[in-house]
Length: 356
Image (cartoon, rainbow, N blue to C red):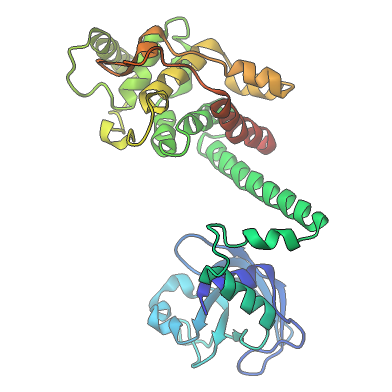
């Protein structure tokens, strides 16, 4: 038995809930299973249970054996004092909070269907010989169930992305324009460079970029400077021009020292069009091409209109260079392709509007 399986069972309540009782014989009714916690602390928070007609609100901790509570030293951790229910596969000893109060325990060993346990065992054993363990089971699903699953998963994914947008909005004190810019930055990094791109967006207030929309070179200087690409020495004339411009603008806007260094950007196993240098140049071109990014996305009415907005080509220098001083030997470097454009739309515009 694995703890992750018990998380799944508890999250979706896939067990027999009739006549539930705790390990010490108290009646138990589950009002709310709580929200799965992917960070440190108890496994589920904001849960509600009724034990012997008394309503409890707090966290739920899940283990294979109840003795794992002490093995993980939860009894000495104040973060676990709000646990109202200990859910285990096997109960082998009572568990206590740091103040020595007993934690009610629910045992699931005899409450989960054998068919579900066997299917889980088959999935994790690799029995089906497919990189996606459940691939061979899809054909057994009814069409209505399959469509419902896809719709449910899509909405869950969209809701998660929207929560991230709301978190950014909170950090930006309700500023939708700044939030839009930071979200756009993150998604110009795609998968490998999403984190440094987000840091770049947070370190470079978009209002300063907007002031220089008429000069692509100044926008590039600010972005490449804050990204940490202008810290080293290069003989390339365009690099030197950007470095001098960044030195002036950094003082003008009292920008803090760049939070990023070149080594934080990933180049390995990428073709030049996907290099972060090219993506930063494309982001700069998008910024100078469009004002008021939030209004731009909010007022766009259809997919074709949005894809046209993202049909951008980076500045002339970056059409022939993939890094400073390094020319592309195989011809012109193209702008954002269709798949990249769709990626940006899916991960930026849709969650943004949904959150709004």
